[in-house]
Length: 235
Image (cartoon, rainbow, N blue to C red; front, side, top):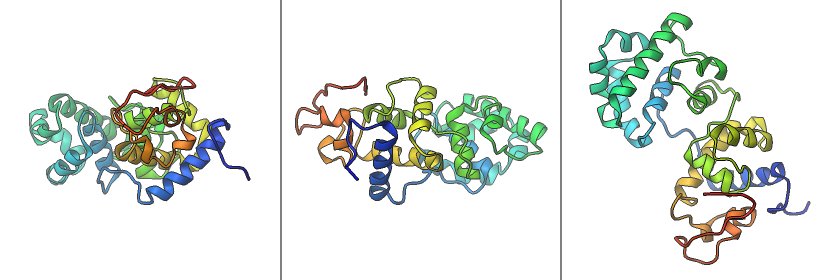
């Protein structure tokens, strides 16, 4: 079989990309620590505009104090906000978490719903958060979580030309086997953090360079140099 290249159909290149990233990041997984679906849902909400490391540092104390949706409702918003203060936007996040907890209690008997279409009906829960929870807490393949890393790499790799995360998700869902919908997020995030950074991509050290329109257009060894994109790919 001939080697995949930038001129191949997205599905064929996506397969080659997945294989290489799996070999490079064999332990790629959700970087948020959790033991229950509720903990993952809360952690994912807290991760907005915050690092996963900070969320993981806050989570043990938070869940020791507020272990389930009922505990979030019984507490005041001020108490929840104080417990998550270091994650940023603590008042907005506390309000969102208590709103989510109320719906989970009233409509789902205190259990986090499994399906993406149910999760996105929770107040303040978008497709990315819903895909993270459905995929990682329940093992479902209802969608692909597209964060800034996933969107950036999808465009640089020529798998999508869209800035809108929903359009990126649709493009990736077409190119990537459904069985890998959760895994592809973890792999792209790992590669985005290690190599394909937003401002200083290390293209000369990238295992995907020959499959990447962005990487092949790189004019030299200096990873900070401006790159001329091709095929509609954008940073």
